[in-house]
Amino acid sequence: MVEKYSNARGHFFAAVRALAASSDGIQTRLIEANESILNVTLDEFAGDLELKLKFARILDLLAVDQDDLVTAAVETAAHMTDFEAVKVADLICDFCFELTWPTATNS
Image (cartoon, rainbow, N blue to C red; front, side, top):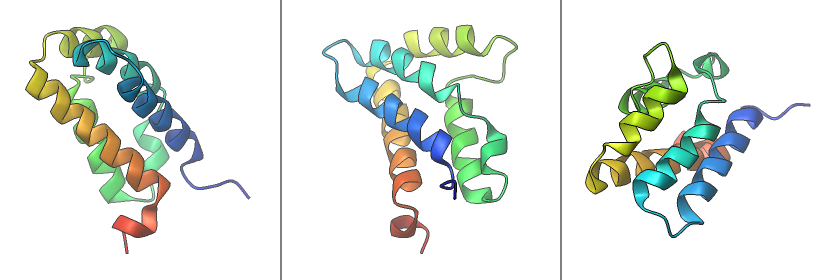
């Protein structure tokens, strides 16, 4: 049996690792995390409206509604203040936690 959201969980875990395992500035770490996050699609959460909305919010904060997703996400992260970047990083970590332990937050 394939675990629910296993692809998204793997990519978000890689994103959290990129956010945590570097001494670079938060914007640089967020750009690295984007590489993993952009491998996940909204369709992966078709059965769970709450997760789909939370993921859409992350994408919106990264300005990923443009035609060139990677360029838009990199440019947006590069121009964020530290506060804004930390806020997005926090949302990414929370989302990864929800994917990893869904019963802890969706009970």
